[in-house]
Length: 414
Picture (cartoon, rainbow, N blue to C red):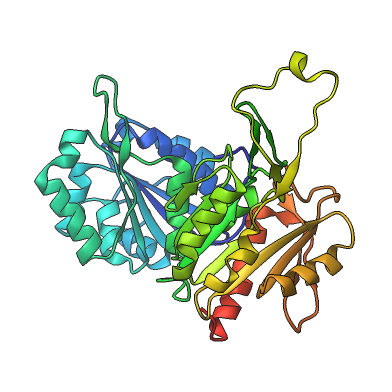
């Protein structure tokens, strides 16, 4: 993920997280998970199996969480430590989850602190498998995973295709990355019945309108706002589709991403999906104009003389043009990035495009708009006064947007 400072925030802030570590080479990744969850405001209790300690030391986890790492089922902490851990936990995550652990957990074994904690907890459980691809493909491993997911309701996160241990080449069995584990834990903490079963369609990023094969008309949007909304909606339990213009950001975890380049391509992608969407968020910075004709080869300075004139023509309006195709009762959110008369222009957009909510912000304000990880927004909706928020991270803004969408859904829309 991009290097954005981690600060305590929803849904991790103030939550008790039990992080189990078993004996696989991927255990080194879990150190980063423990550190990040702590920085996000979680209270993290790390539990290591004996085999895990062959790969990572308890002291390392103490250093990144500020809490003692736990290793023994029977210790000075008391024989009922697993009961306390299970009772107090808001979520339990095991990463990496080896084939041996999956077998023991699926059969309800109680032979170490992690397995006994799982038996004692009623909190949601996230399991992140990691092993050799041949082991992962074994029928018994698959049966154990199916039992944990289908019968016990555990969230199985991963594995993915990728490089395995040295000498094992690539294959299915690689543990997902630390930030993805953190998001899986976030989903277990944040899932909301209002969003479960809902399809959320989001547009994000800029569009690039080609002048020739190497040049384009575009804007400074990074896509960070739309990506943050997509990830937050997934954490709440929604089925999320993100139609994204060109962006250097990694795809949000668990989200279907449809990559497009131009406004016309975004228009077509949204048109094909909006009829099935319960919640629509138009956060992309779509170019209003495109070159009337794109050159088939690079335009040379020597061929054009001292100046180059590019004729522009109007692009389709993605939100306005697809308004009639919106699902009956769906909720639609628009964005208004302005440089002048911000609220006046935002209200006009609210009415013209039939939005239920508009998120307005000033592109000239420091710390807001393009190229930064923060934003200062004002919410506008029909028949309500503008609601201005202070400067906050775009991740926090995403949560505020979805809080308001939730209220709209609760009132009978979507």
